[in-house]
Amino acid sequence: MNREELKAILPHREPMLLLDEAFVAEDGSARARCAIKGDEWFLQGHYPDEPVVPGVILCEMMGQTCGVLLGEQATDGLTPFFTGLDKVKFRRPVRPGDVLETECRIVRTKGPFYFAEGTGKVDGQLAVSANFSFALVEAK
Image 1 (cartoon, one colour):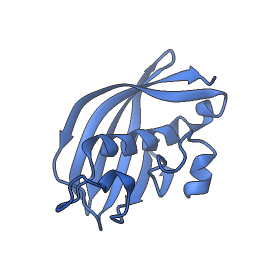
Image 2 (cartoon, one colour):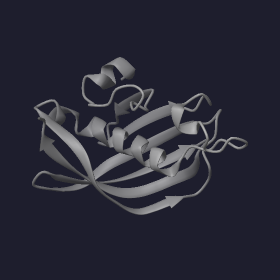
Image 3 (cartoon, helix red, strand yellow):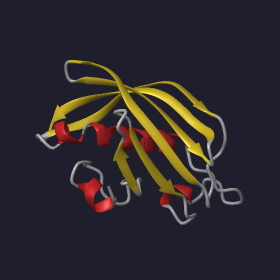
Image 4 (cartoon, helix red, strand yellow):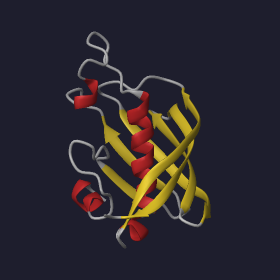
């Protein structure tokens, strides 16, 4: 899916739509890519002499990747909201010129809650990993 196709299933819009492309793999995981160009709003001032993608933005990118898996449910008038982040680990900085490749999978569900795990890699090196949860909430 390209950015326009992602807009059909994700509630995010510019500047918060952070993924460039995504797809659902045969194994049931979602995978996405985001090329960090250097002119992104979240790099302005983080840090002026050494720009680094903020950790919360990396988590949001993984969350949006997971949103691809929740796409069908989210288009039924439900919106995915983060309900938790756990075991977040940052292993290497993500900088301008990097391409972050995320992979997420749903590991269990309970009612409106979805529990997932995800990773983000640059050139095959682990940059971020986390467990997280979402609730699907009726859109207002």
